[in-house]
Length: 404
Image (cartoon, rainbow, N blue to C red; front, side, top):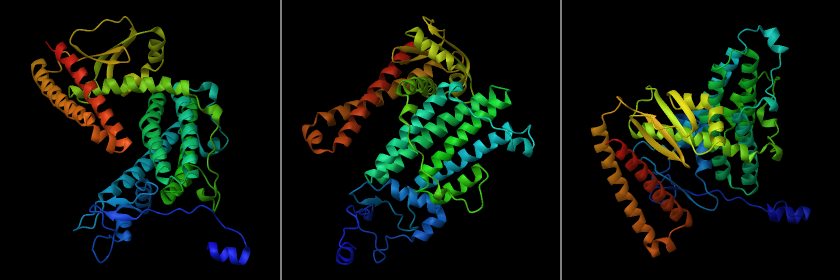
């Protein structure tokens, strides 16, 4: 193409060339029909879906490196494709939920009223979760565009995956659900769900280049479209720097961390998700206590708390276990719910296991040949593992002491 264009037009048509990765099996062999290690793509598409296969291949293709896929010799199946299928299911379920909530919010209106009713969530009416998700969304648009500009397609897919699965589906959609359940104001409900759907519209437009079929289907369902109108002709969302609010993001991250700590503490003691327990949060300062109290409905619902007390100088309730978040003490009252003797024995065994794993990881990091020869990301991963082992060990030992 370069030679022909130079010969006939005397110009260079392009200067960047993208080489796709070579796909290899788990043994490092290039896929080949003669070796019998090359599945029929149509069979994979039939099982997982075209978008699932497409997304998976993009997400596991680091620029400049080959791809290794574990292929079942008997079934010619590739388990890695579950990544794309699960992601497509997540998208589909999120859209179904939002459209269901929209129907509920407009249930008191006939079609004519709906057509002439506009309920928009204005920035001055934003809750912290709205500010956070808006800031995250515009940051993701910026990061995704940079990944495309640098031809890092796997990074593009990773940025979108983390935002959609984690931030939007696992957190923001849950916040929307809690806030809609907590109000009887139908106009407010409509504004909330419309804002969420508007953002989801932007999400599927961002994702369209690597999942064209499911995003087209979802985009058509989100609103009434003109005949022959397609997502493929829509503009990509643009990032607005004034919508990126890092300070507000950090506030919501602190709320997320509190929720995750309480969930982890419940998990440590095998508390059933259906069981509601009292929670007490002892903050180090009034600002933190005020932040948590402003989000108390979300915290209570997401942690399955029967009651929650948040303040400065709050005392430890009897029969409770503890975890600590940046100096904030978190107590979950488990009195009469667990067997202290059995839990103490179980936790001591878990503490011993974590200690051995921490010692093994420390020994690996003390090996100068490993640190010098291993890729930087592998060394960093081992360091993060060590920090996690030590942190979890400390939390377990603190609760062992409380069990008597």
